[in-house]
Length: 126
Image (cartoon, rainbow, N blue to C red; front, side):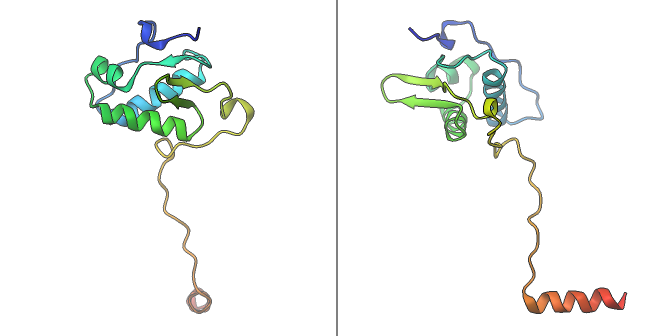
């Protein structure tokens, strides 16, 4: 029988006011998985139960679960529940960066051939 995080053994730390509910929930669950507090095969609480426990919208929990599943941390099975994956991305050096955790940086600008010629001419003037 798999371990159950919903049996009262798993409690999330308090949220900082600077962090959105969604980011907090995602980061805390991901951290608990990576540091072993939520072991492989552990069944997580239903989205409804977790939302009620932390007084957040069910959609907030669903989004966090979906993001973790997309990154390979969780697997969901209709009627069975949501479980921590057996094989985690970070443990094998194949870690995926989260869209929540990655700082947004401006994309590199790629100039057309014509634009590159113009940029060279401007920089040559000096």
